[in-house]
Image 1 (cartoon, rainbow, N blue to C red):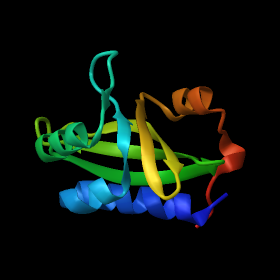
Image 2 (image 1 turned 90 degrees about the vertical axis):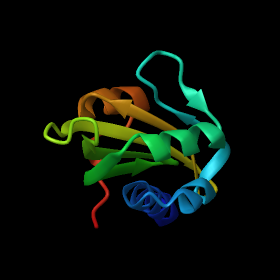
Image 3 (image 1 turned 180 degrees about the vertical axis):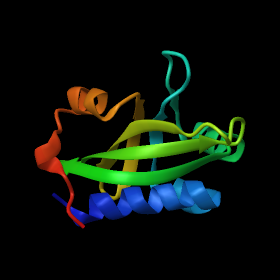
Image 4 (image 1 turned 90 degrees about the horizontal axis):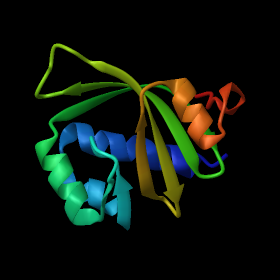
Length: 126
């Protein structure tokens, strides 16, 4: 486990929550892959900027799990379009050389574990 992977994800999420687009871009690879509501993910910094400025999301972090560059975070996501209905989900991040390369939203922690191969044994103890 690398604390730099955890630090990168924490800083990335802080940048999302504070709408700090410059920091968000610095923490992301040029070809970052982002989730969408359809099956065709978005890719690249321009897509990241668009998502970050228009999504209106606030991320409240729960437990984190990490192993070999993958960080899975239990989240409560609150969207500006529906602020009264926070969404419980898990977000999987792939981090390479202190940059987020991939972000994948999962409906549950179990779904994220199945997709990433991580599990309870990978819990990050703060």
